[in-house]
Length: 268
Image 1 (tube, one colour):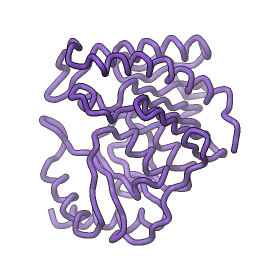
Image 2 (cartoon, rainbow, N blue to C red):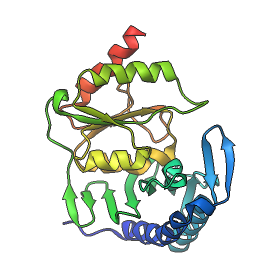
Image 3 (cartoon, helix red, strand yellow):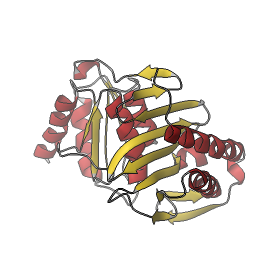
């Protein structure tokens, strides 16, 4: 087992401290004050508290690093040798608000425009998914790898559903129809960071979604790559954390899954 680097330890400690607050808030979810940012897009007091804790902890350990955060935006740059944290303090906010125990903290480290480390922490299951470029991916202290399934007919695939006022609903329904016809099952659990972590751990065989934000996917991209998987945009182009779509799978299923999604496009 590769020992966690100093940066990974910083990320894990920060996530652990924010998680303690999230667990308390989850127990009081019905009493949270909720404000509406847009249709079906909520920000909670818990979200803001967790982000504040993460910013304080990460800045204390690495004051020279910048930030890209869901609620407070960007400070600093990862260009020209800089480093910055890409942080989602509560991925799965809607689950959290409805008392569904499936959400996570996601932290990635970007260096010179490249994603080099990622941590996804599930506070309720106490599962820490971590990865750093060139060192592999781990769940707690156990090395993880993407699944070895070869055929879509045996595959369990995850996705995310566009919600009210967002995304191309007819396009998504066409993609679901095309993929559903070829796979063993499709799941939509509402937390993209955990979806990608589960691909890295072999729990899911693949994942696709459109219109995600950098903080939703940055850590998960590192996890899947270091677990031996392949990540691209849906059309096959190189993935960036701010790309308009993502497709992740093992190297045997990535191309067949991509073809299924393209068939949906061609039929539209």
